[in-house]
Every structure is written in C-alpha cells, then in structure tokens.
Length: 91
Image (cartoon, rainbow, N blue to C red; front, side, top):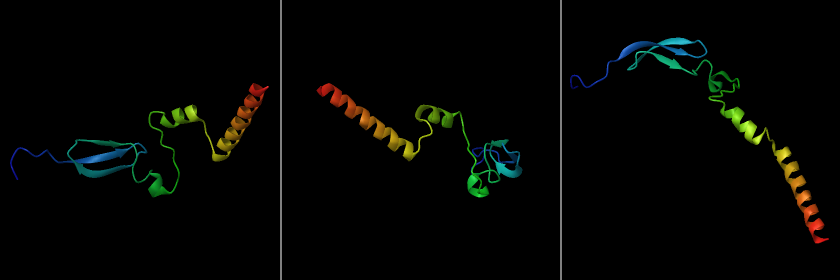
C-alpha cells in the first residue's frame, strides 16, 4: 500500500433515527442513519410509512387516494357526461 493516499479508518458508533446504536468502522468520524435493520419494514415485518420531504402527502394531494374501483366509477361517469354533451350538441 502507498503511504499517505488512504483515508483514516475510524471505529465509530452508528446511530439510527429510531435510537438504535452499534459500533462499526468507517472512514467518516460519525454515522447518523434514518433507518436500520431494527426499524426497516423488510426485517421487522411491520409496515411503516417513511415519508421524506412530504412526498407521499404531495402525491395524495395531487392524485388523491385512488383505488381501482374509484377510477372505474370516475371513468364511467366521465363517459356518460361525454355522451350527454354529444346528444345535447346534436339537438
């Protein structure tokens, strides 16, 4: 190995947002994580909504909480409204 080109390797305590801490090694002096294996839905089996920067709220505000049934009924009502316009224009 060449001297002086490699970063320093520190023993650090990693901290998760849930409060879990553990010791590891890193080139960074400290580690702060948003999610770890103790709070991640894949490892815990619990569904947890992780909303960073309000993305989920923005999406539901823009598109609403739509289901396939609500989309079908909306398409059906739009189709009937279009048909009513067409018959009114023909008169």
